[in-house]
Image (tube, rainbow, N blue to C red):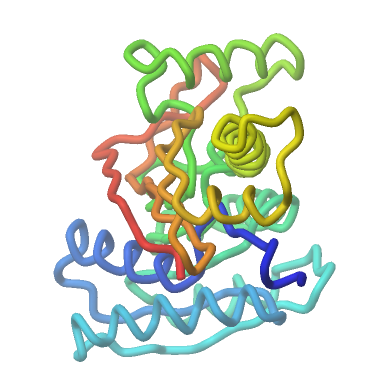
Length: 260
């Protein structure tokens, strides 16, 4: 029963890794060496494996200098930063997110790591609000400036409401939740309209959800019969805007992707 009613309105590490590797080779076509710095649990290892496999498939001559994994709840990255400084790779890949990402940015900035190497952040969008240095590669399932709020009223209203309530732009988890909540809402509403009832049967809701397409603040979601979504992904190079105490993304790109 659980499998029947479970839907994923977000993406996966596979499409994260492939998209990020493609962008890295677009902006760093001569990259020769890379180090992975990721969490020692399934998500971190999957993000690194999918990125590494995609990168080496598209550019087999890239050399992996080391694969570093940090334990759950780690807050001190001094040993890993020292190792990266010694190895001097062209690129570091990391999927650190949330407080882990903020701690790494602060510690790596203090040690001068970003002056020596470029970092590709698989979940870097959150760091845009936390002092991320210029010219880093940032991937995120969502970014509050895309789609452009000036041209896309759903995102404009969402961003304005979020800032009004919380004092900062919505991070990607807020967009994730909006995708899921709106998907359930629309599936029930459409199923009720089709059946001409006030509260539809669950089987009818599942049938509708399997082929539902709907607009959200940061996406246009197209669900598939395997209960996964086809949705967008953004990646870019970062540029700080100190007057706003935020960061913006330059060379912003977006694509549609299958989330299997």
